[in-house]
Length: 272
Image 1 (cartoon, rainbow, N blue to C red):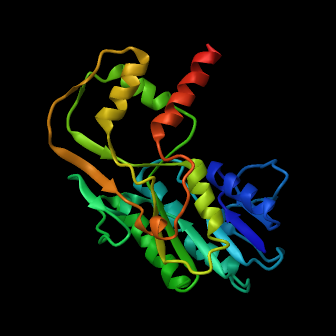
Image 2 (cartoon, rainbow, N blue to C red; image 1 turned 60 degrees about the vertical axis):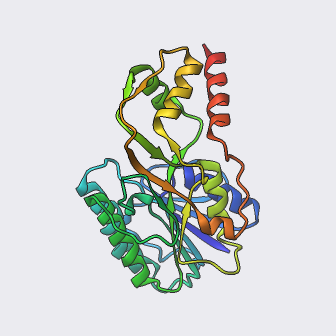
């Protein structure tokens, strides 16, 4: 199968490697030069995308990320890119098109439970833009599109969390956070090539919502930093569950984030 990646960052690279090892032909579109050997790389601007010279494309992954978090960047990356991509894919026999979105489309912020059946109600402008993107893709590819909504993606970098742990002395609320390891996300995205039956959308999370103050407290303990004080028992954030992943019996390699954080801390300490 000829598979095209539009956007080729860390997640796309992991998915492409899985699919190359399965014998698929991989092509990629990105704004900068790529060097890995398991794909054919094209440097193009998505707004002027030209796929006329490529072999027939049967599956597409759209994994784009804005260069900044502002409204204009979101609009340009997620919405204004759709028309040129659709035009460029015209004539290609696309069987499935996977669009990576975000659980930001769920606007709840009082500790509510969210799962794949939850009503989508964005609470901020970025969430509304992401939802508009999802709906536009479903209009253009009503049968082929698969919307994937990851929670917070983490990998081997712990710099942000260690900095927060050192700098935080109080935390205002019990704020639930949700995460998925980048390798588990990549494994699921690669699985979508082979699933005989797919849903229109999937939440991707390890199904372990954790209060942020507990995560920072764990880091403070490991770093021998004075523990923070919780100011209020009020719940914020949301508790996200990927119920459709459970239904397909998806196997996680990284269910317990603290195991990954401990391994990253060990590597960091050995590098000193």
